[in-house]
Image (cartoon, rainbow, N blue to C red; front, top):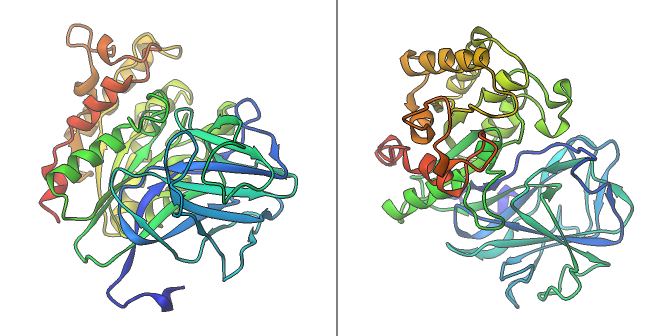
Length: 388
């Protein structure tokens, strides 16, 4: 594919969804003779894209009869005339081998700000949903039969959530000065409690701030959050398959492999405390190992302090002391390239072990939309703007 590119061009990550194990309590079991229509919210723009498709946890090849990309309209529709066939090695039928992820051929599609991208995937044969990204606040539309080319949503009568087999989109950029920032974390980064289909995750809001400040410079913020994710343990080890592989295990695939990656914002550890019963020393050791691997690649990594979780189902006074010890280390260490105080952004000044009520989704662990905005707004733009 690269031989078709101009020598001054490069691929730049525009959108990402970390893949994880399917959990039958949350996911569709399989698809057969159905079209899935999934919506991407891009952070980088251009006239040529390529998709990343994943069969990472599959035991058999995943076969897609037709895949199309188009500019999104509303409620599962796409803008008429913008639909493009997506191919792999020139073939319309796309086969992803078991355990593999692939990039499609380049697609001519003008991606611009404030317009989402619709990806429609036709699954002709009965195919188990082995690989997905659990995303409660993002709708996916399902139709019986092959309706990848239909710009209307008349046949898409079923609405579910999350992404199946779709893990990324990149755009071809001509600009040599750019930043690709990966937000690496758990459900707070994934934005699992944000408003449905509103793009109110903190990485989306932070991208909007960066783009408003310097619209001429290509910047993207890729969301590599996984619900229930831990630094040290894989999800199945604590009975939560959707928690995916640990941050240390997925670092190479979900962060370091991105085209044009320059920076990492890391916010994890609360699930290690609450679900994994890890000690502060164990969490700090995991963070040190992760930072060393990121620095080996010449990238910068910024640590977020762990927000409060007083009143959450897995809260205890002992676990609160662990969180405080981890946060003290984050604030005083010289391992990270900088610190972002997410804790102070969300904490109730009168009860610092708890989320401010205005920012609490209701479970005393996850933010609501106002909380996600507070997280995005507390990040100093100077950490990134002066490096462009």
